Length: 89
Image (cartoon, rainbow, N blue to C red; front, top):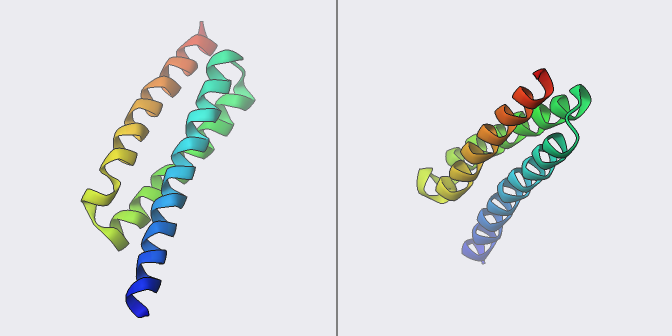
């Protein structure tokens, strides 16, 4: 039974990590669609949350378990930088 419970915990950590990256994607998409300081700030907060979730997942599951989430995070960070540039121009 304990093994089943730990698998549930692992899936929960993975799901939470994926959800945080998904929320970041949505926030960045909003900032790109409607460049505004408030939306950029919200996307930055989502970025911080996703980075924290990925670090927690790494600590409990190992690097391999979060590789896809880290790749997605990198893409979203690039998109967020694009949104910032759009706002400044």
